[in-house]
Length: 300
Image (cartoon, rainbow, N blue to C red; front, side, top):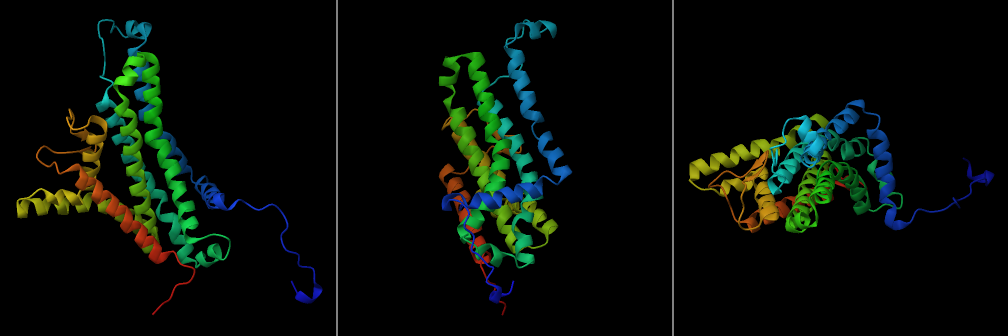
């Protein structure tokens, strides 16, 4: 409007608290995601396996159900132990990878492609708040797929089995929570970093899979040529599997990892090296984001 009309008035309504402004970005991102019917169907389908696990736990503690299935003599259909929950986390984590590859590349690349990032940062948003807002979208969805169902099933098993079982299997809680978080934080940061550097969404999604599958094949080739096992540092699934085994079962494991995250016999590397490599990957992703998330882009 023309300035001489003097009809402009500054906004005088309530302001969003500074600590929660990043949630505005998350709210609008969720509204965009809700328009995808395929995403909705896939997300709902990802909870089928946790429902099957809940049914298994309930049937094992229900005498009438066992009688109906002619399994009165069976004490346990499936052992509900750390391996059970590790398998659940492994399956759900792979589903989370597909989800991150589908929605992650569309979080940052449209803003960079359309030069809209300067409009975000011209408002009371810092670069950290912008990244946190975009990251919270993935972290929320992936958490509901991975460690949240695991903890709910642990609560169900503890309720049916008793306090003694719950206290004897506390490692399941820490393993599910911290193991789930290191995985979803890694793939969320990777998805955002690739979205910032590769503006074509299909290519960014393909690169996310390439990091896990192509890099693992390259690492296996290094092991064969150099007669070593340090090539597994490039195998993200092996790194995650080693960390999960240590979180769930300590220094005397009875399993070799979860489904899709198996640690092959003879391929074990020190757990502290695995943690260091995973943290290093997260730091590299943050550095890549810091190079791209800027209010103005200088083209030479």
